[in-house]
Amino acid sequence: MPTPLREPTFLILTALAPEPLHGYAVVAKVADLSDGRITLRPGTLYGALDRLGDDGLVAVEREEVVEGRLRRYYQLTDKGTEVLYAETERMRRNVDAATRQMRARDQQASSAAHPTAGRAGKSAARPIGGLA
Amino acid sequence: MSGRQDRLERHYRRLLLAYPAAYRVERGDEIVGTYLEAAGSDQRLPSVADATDVLRGGMRQHLRANRAAGLAAGASVAATFALTAAVVLAAVWLAYIELPPAPSWLVTRQVSPFWSLGAVVWIAWLGAGLAALALPARLTRWVVLAALAATVAAEPVAALSGYDRPPLLVLVPQLALGMLALGWPTRPTWTSRMAPAIAGTAALLFTVRIGGAGHYYRGIDSEVLAVGAIVLLAGSLLLAGFSRALHGDNRGLWAVLLLLLPIGLLAIDPLAGVVSEVTGQAGPYGNQPNEWPMLAGVTVVVTILATGAVPLVIGLRARLIRQRPGLCPTCGKSRT
Image (cartoon, rainbow over all chains, first blue to last red; front, top):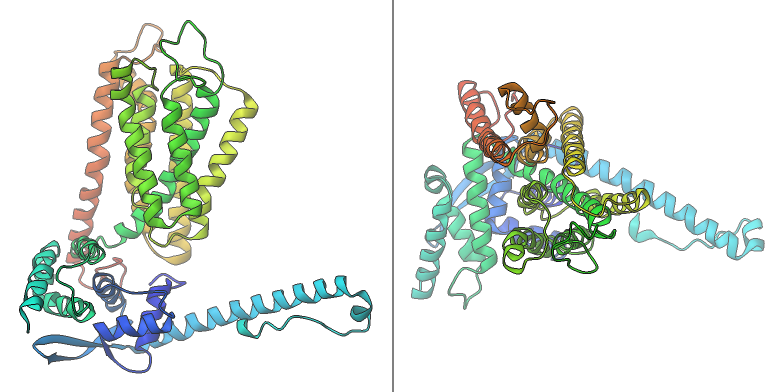
């Protein structure tokens, strides 16, 4: 599986992290995790699940028939969990680096606007907690 | 289950014929079930987006069944290269040929202030480069389709109206590049989005700076096209190498395979020259322009070889992987 993972792939693995889910539940969970930005269609979802299965990242846990419809539940494998941890860590490091850079940028802008405050060592940096 | 749901299910099952038969047996019920769960309560027909999704998914499964799933990813890479090359060539032809004043003895009917109908074609391709930068992928594909239509229309419109047009030697490779560019990725990276616009602008500025020829002149056209072929081949091979070394995937190699057709068509004149030399049909000085039948013949052979290379590689690869069951059906790499 090429890394970094594409966003839909990352979100499918994330959706499966807590518990096994069937296809439609994965679609709903991915939409929820992405605040509605990403709506997977079944053709795309099952194509992604096939690829993830080929790479040994997800596996079928069980099958059920509900109201005459077949449901397969997919779960994250140990390898899938490892890949998800590694990818999350990579993204977290990127977010940390970006947060530090933007904090430095805000501090420089603040020092330029208020030289006295800057010399006194008082930082007027805008909080960017949302990125942290 | 209601009559409405029965009808909807039948429609989805009909669309599912796009998938390989074996896959339908294994996954058909599950996929249709998921579409029905996702369908609105008053939905009677699959939406256009669903139908496209099923067809795209079916094509992907056919490739996967033939151990060529990487071809889809390669097509996205090839589309970026193809659109960038198409925009760069459009910028060069516009600034080098269409904008400078054409010699009066050469012009039959000018598309003022430009030299020929080619200006419309090249402006359409520059628009496609800007669309890739600024518009969503779906709209970008429509703009590419419009540029492709303008390229196809150049010959019949010139024949009907009497206006000048660029030579087929220039238009045919542009068509091949445009066909590949239609595979523009749904979620292009920023590098992909910026590449056509940046490379096109650089080509436009460079060509304006060096000045223009004012007319399509066979020797110059062939040189520009041959340079395009070499840059496209070298660039795609370089990316294939990096992609293999850094990420261990084959998408770059699939992209090179898909780009063989436009690369071959860009190099038609030098290739025809080689064939003329080898077959002893070159002029007494060995440097005379290749005749139309020779160019047409080489174009047909290049088209057959380049398009045939894709199914040939897919077939050979599928056979190799079937003989070695330890290989992944998606990427072809060893699972051990």
